[in-house]
Image (cartoon, helix red, strand yellow):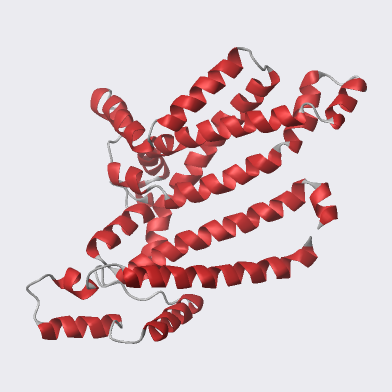
Length: 315
């Protein structure tokens, strides 16, 4: 397993470079002049030329890409024209909201989906199987932002139990911050829990008919022991795959929910940078999201080797 790390890390680095080139090219092909969008139509040609020079837009494309990539690898992500601060600081500040939100959402998704999926598989055709099927279909079909609006109407407007939006900051205390993130996390977690429930049920059902489970039953082990000691551990590979994809989606795809709850996270930062055409922030945030996806896939690949000795032997 350790011998595979250099090759996997090299592939990860090459993938990041290729993705960064694609991101830079796509951002450069966006219609309109970023300087004109930032300053407005009333700006003088001299002011536009000065801003274009400050942003490096008057330099050749490959030179700008090389300078940006060198800055990324050195930790200098540039300076936001809109906010007037380094982009690295902006990302770290907004990540302090988005990362806990994603962690709470993925924890809720696991807490709902894994037990429900396992119960549905172990009692196929029973009450839990029907509940899991209905829950999966409804939660997948309903958009997260619509769930967010319903939660605001019920728990904020009607019952007055939860804040309707905003984030007080971690300096205000752990509970006020968690309370502000709880409803957004539920809105994000429900659709992901529906997908994870379906995958868990299918994966556990597949393992329940394998030779090793029949051997375990032949040895006289109880059904619960066969289920939790043999079927569920061997069903973890597809479950981990979905969890890795869901975590990256929760970090990178929470734009609508963060805007509904007015949370100062990475999703809202990306939306504001796009509307203000702050290309420095746009490039760095999109690259961060892409790097997160690639790194999570790398971690999931390594986890396969850790939990499945057959894959370790093949590798």
